Length: 335
Image (tube, rainbow, N blue to C red; front, side):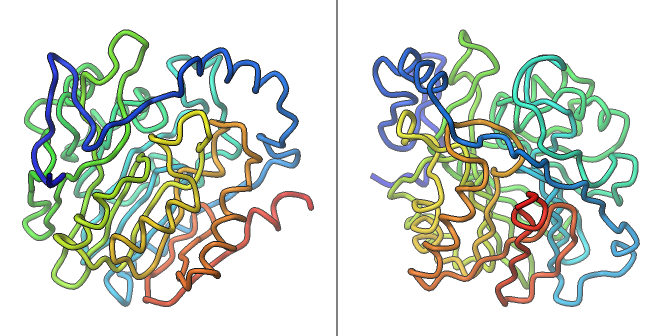
């Protein structure tokens, strides 16, 4: 059965495109025990950064029409054909319901909210705290930037002050036009949702394809690996750039976070040209060493002949079709 169809529900819960286990049986107890025993460097001993974005660069359009600024985790400033899109903006110090507990940033955002260039759209992939940050959304509530989000997420945006006319909720395979030029398509992802234990699966989670007259890119957000990547690539690819998560993976939740090796496989299935690793190096969300995902990806990419696009946080880098790697995790780690 094709995964390229609107999301299914059972009762009030959205379903994944393929059968999915969020956590292995008995996982919570096993995870707690593993965390207590864990000796990995999950937080850098020498915190990276600080990183700073040269905002004057935004005064000049990218020569190729495509430029990406990675602001950490899954927050990306995408400049494509003269339009600007911000994905899953998180400026808070913690990815949490509280300013006092929860995963803390390894480095401050390289760019202050007030220094962002004018935006044409903000994409919210799902409602987890490391993708939907209430204080950041409240800051944007005073602007006129339109939001594009997965089904059900709009109620949170409204709660944080965004007017309903600025919100477009999208089901899988829905399309929207950004700034009269870009085509945004919401696509399946293998994950889950919920901002608490009692409201899981009640809002949708998505990945997105963004197509312009000259470029086609894929924002994977959060997803475990699934065979549907090949179907997405066949229907919506090939992609000049895939932005795929490589961090926060674990044997305890293999279905919902793919990790670097599976990300490489997903990239190939999507018919991607350049692979940009995201969702790593910013928050402590798993048991692996903080820099292991990128180290593993580099080895895997070399073995598979995959070209990487891995800029330093805060650096606006033009996508030329050629590989680009800034090994900031080495030069800023004190090693």
